[in-house]
Image (cartoon, rainbow, N blue to C red; front, side):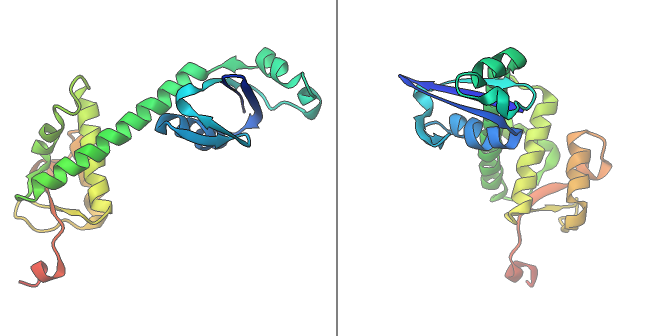
Length: 198
């Protein structure tokens, strides 16, 4: 369970016994987006907010009586503010990188199929400083999202479409450098029905 205190200027609000989903959707995601949001029946500005997040056991009604809730939460919990905010910021940065990389791949495959082995190079400047495994994972995620949105398709070495049931296996094999099929596969613009009938 999570317990939260928000401070903004003279305003203070507290919320107790939040699940991880409630915390993420109600506070962490709005904080990383920035700007105004609503939490604990009040309006807040992410840029002017000081949050404190505690993790601990569920507080019983008797432990939440006026004036005792926050001291009990603090005494019985652990301050996880910094790691929680860092994790959410890292996830937001990863999502942004995947989105930008998806756009780059889409632009690149407009000129023709892009071999998966070369696709990671499209991300080099975007993911500078990241490990090779992170680059492969981010590129695989970007390709997967293009495939799922039906903006692209995977093709084999001969240019024939790979069955969508095999996409995940091909991408996972490529990202882990363990799939033979992935080394000869490419991501290509999704063919329209008229293209397929030519």
